[in-house]
Image 1: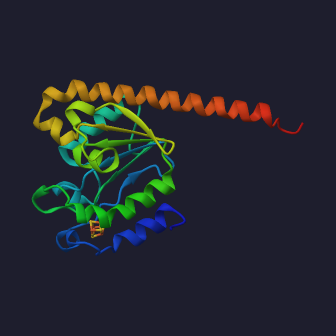
Image 2: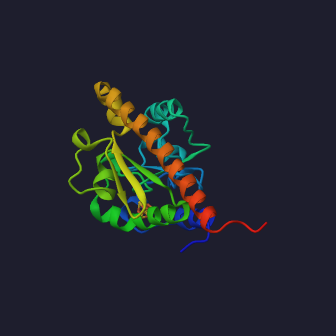
Image 3: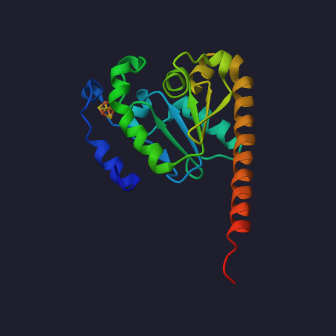
Amino acid sequence: MFENMEALEQACMGCQQCRLAADRTNLVFGTGNPHADIMFVGEGPGQQEDLQGKPFVGPSGKLLDKMLAAIDLDRNVNIYIANMVKCRPPQNRDPRPDEEDVCIRWLREQVRLIRPKIIVCLGRVAAQRLIDPNFRVTRQHGEFILRKGVYLMGTYHPSALLRNPANKPAAFDDFLALRAKALEVDAADIDALRADLAKNPPLT
Ligand code: SF4
């Protein structure tokens, strides 16, 4: 258990707990607002991410940033972005289950510290691990499920959208649904606060 994100990042940066440590240039811990209500989770760093030590940079990151901007989200302001594994799998292969099993402790701690209200899984790998082992992006993208007080949703990975731009409209619909869900969650928070204030009026 770590007290804050800085302490967690410092511990994670030296991690050698799986085979992916051997070939990394940089470990890619995550980026964004550690108090964000919305968290995005991808599968693992690619070549550019490994070189720069940041998640979702390069062409797929640019596309993600554009989609985020369209719904008033910004990785430097109001979201947090991380990956299932923090070190680059060779040749951009999928992370292996045993690598995810070891690395997920870092992601769990990130989620525990951030306490997001919504987690968006970018692509099949994250969605199958965090939502449903049989998750099919083409069939289940954009569906929200509530688990332990957190809404989970899976959508297309930006790299997949670059390979198959025909899916961009569907992915953008998912982002619009995300904005609507974020507003709904905010409204529910305000209602809960009002109910609490009604039950426990502040001293005058
Ligand atoms: S992928 Fe995760 S578990 Fe493996 S070395 Fe990197 S940080 Fe550690």
